[in-house]
Image (cartoon, rainbow, N blue to C red):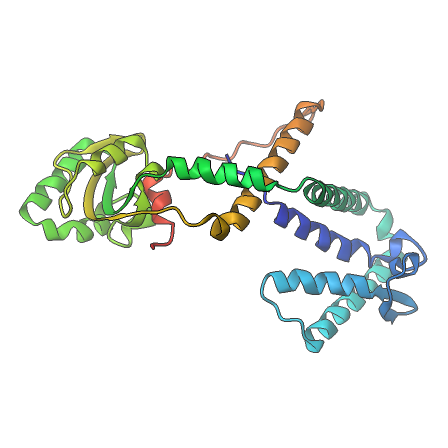
Length: 302
């Protein structure tokens, strides 16, 4: 299950605030005049609030942009230009256009939705007991060892058997064959390398076959899973220990927050009457299945 990342939602709210807060069409008085926020600049008498500038700076800092006098000046310049353009749009009556009205409605909904999400997170903190319980649950799914392996994933059993026949003649050709023939794009370019992983991350057929291999050996017969046929090479095994709770507590906290938020969203949808009255858009083609082995290959090696 994928969880909605609340951080992205909140960032959207900040962007929406920056746009709507500087739009002169909302009221004859500037947004800064409606609250106690000091004014960072004025444009034809309309204020750019310091709060708006600070929020945009904070959003930029989250993506690595430094907070400097130059960057703040650039933000004010951009907001000033936005006000000037908005004024010209109002003069032309564009603020009455249906497209504009709909856009402003969406921005308002986005800002309110994100404000609610932030309020929910702040008022529903994850308890230490919940974090510890999640830690123990994940710890219980771990095995005592982690494995370093390579694999070649192909469509048919015949292809896999042909690869095994070639490896029986030249075991050192595994990386070359993986680059040439594996359909797992996440690992093929690296010669089928999956890095270090716990067996619990793989589909059962893959894990069972790997657990039976000796170090340095590859599977003598193709291993079938829902993704195709695998030829697997075990390179190494090492003991694994769960990291201390304190080290992973921030990640577990975020994960549980996302789970709680997802539960809230599902409850809201379940309690609502949602009817699609227009023509539904053509369904996008489903992405190709990604092997669990590929998922492991995308994790950083230890």
